[in-house]
Image: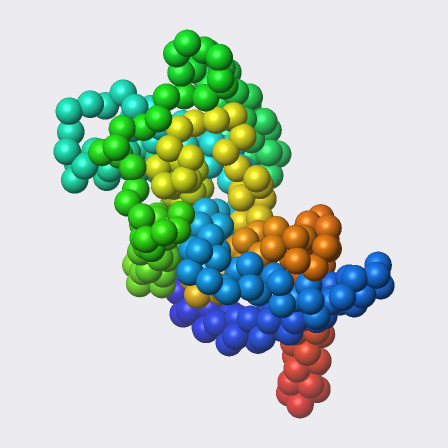
Length: 365
């Protein structure tokens, strides 16, 4: 049984390279289509493209802003990818992000008397645990009652965001209670600047470190092997002796923790205090980042770079080329559609080729 799974995963690895190439081609096609759309509505696509690139990479400040936008997307992309590798669909990254931000904010405000060398790691750990416990709820409901994690994670998003709104406007509101925000986290819990003169912070370095840990866990550990086996066939994995329920709980906790780090780093590096709307949709964009990257560590970084550049360069495109910023969202949607559609077509093609090979082998026999 183990040899069968190993052979299947090697085949999946070869198909993974094919999927990455197809995803890249689909992304390029979607970007070209986006430029044609800009031209069709009466704007200069070349000027728009140049403005967006300048806004994302044209200066130290622009590049720093791209890193700022990339950081939470790397975390949420890994969150979705990790669950997907286990055969689960985590749509709750937005709620997990908010709960991680809340836990990090509370630790950053109310824990006093610690040096930065202890306070900052403790606050980041709190953010991970906050998001992880929120993700674990969906995992526990699936293991105990068979509840679909797709439904429960979406419902938990709404609960988390509403709970944050209550906390920020109630128990944690900054005195005298005029503004809907908490007091700032202590300086000992704030992330230092990564590039001077920009908003880029060390959360980006933490994100890259977790990309490495993500790879080590999935491809260099026994538990990661079990997770990937479960993702190929949950029933067969259970039959082969793998504790699938335990892996579901672990993966949903880790996936929630990664999304929680997205929110925690956003607070500690950018916002400094908790507000009701800390995320412009990083949790949902993480799905697209993961799909573009084919659930691989390097691919997730590339997907986050692409969407981070969209977010960072969109404002400059609006100012310089007069193209509405909403067009950026349209182009992002085109990229998502093209990548998902191309992967579906590739799966159909591979399935057709496999049936053809099996038919030829049966005829020879």
